[in-house]
Amino acid sequence: MTKPIKKAVFPVAGIGSRFLPATKASPKEMLPIVDKPLIQYAVEEAISAGITELIFVTSSSKRAIEDHFDSNFELEAKLIKSGHLEFLDIVRQILPKEVSCSYIRQPDTLGLGHAVLCAKPLINDQPFAVLLADDLITIEKKSCLAQMVAAYEKTKHSIIAVQEIAPSESDKYGMVKLADLDNGLGKIQQIVEKPSSKNAPSNLGVVGRYILTPAIFTYLENTGAGIGGEIQLTDAIAELLKNEPVYAWQFTGTRYDCGNKLGYLEATVAFALNHPEVGAEFREFISSLPNARPV
Ligand code: G1P
Image (cartoon, rainbow, N blue to C red):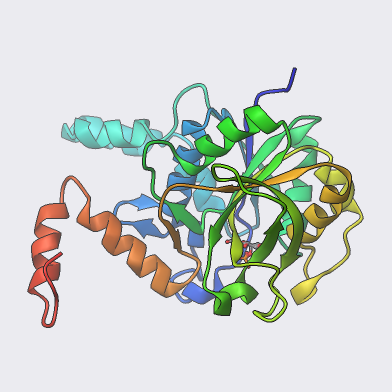
């Protein structure tokens, strides 16, 4: 019987240089989309997929992430004293009781593959998920990771989220070639990290959601520096798929690349328009801007 996926790795050690100076003293994963930090959206997605153990691969400047997922007695006491119980609920409901957090340091920024390898001591011999908080994905009927867990239950093999991207953007993504595609699920034949549009094997780009079998660690341990001088998860997956099947999942949901300013702004506007508290007024505001069409 296959083991259920209970653990998720969140690589959060990156320095967030694209958002400086905002990220000088606070983690990029703590940038809010309206009122919730990016990392909390990723964590909520993981929980919606049945994950109960969260493993954050952090670095020295990421204390705020630990504090965010811990309780804050002083804040709670103040909210109780001032009678702001609606806010108390918000801070107490960040994590359900049954969900645990572990933190492990990535001593140097040697790449995504290295970050995932840092989590090995906490994974043991079981399949696990990896979520990149930069990729914010809207939830339609099911979250992207929940869709992937359902697909994993059928395939019992590693699964990577993919979406069609503009050919000119292939040098920003892991790019895959599929052997087949059936209802969103296809077996990967080839995967390559950030190829030029000329060398891209297709127009399907990897989005930051992975379900990986523990065999990936053997390949990560033997993966040298790849593109950008970093240890690339994609390169280890390319080796993994020589020995066991790896699938791609074309998910349902809109993905925002919050690793860059434009994607972050697009996500902010899209989430603000649907926000229960400010959505209606924000819609009016957007429509009132010069040259704006009604939204
Ligand atoms: C990472 C991966 C890449 C993937 C991307 C998705 O790149 O290396 O294969 O397509 O995430 O967001 P990064 O965006 O960290 O450069």
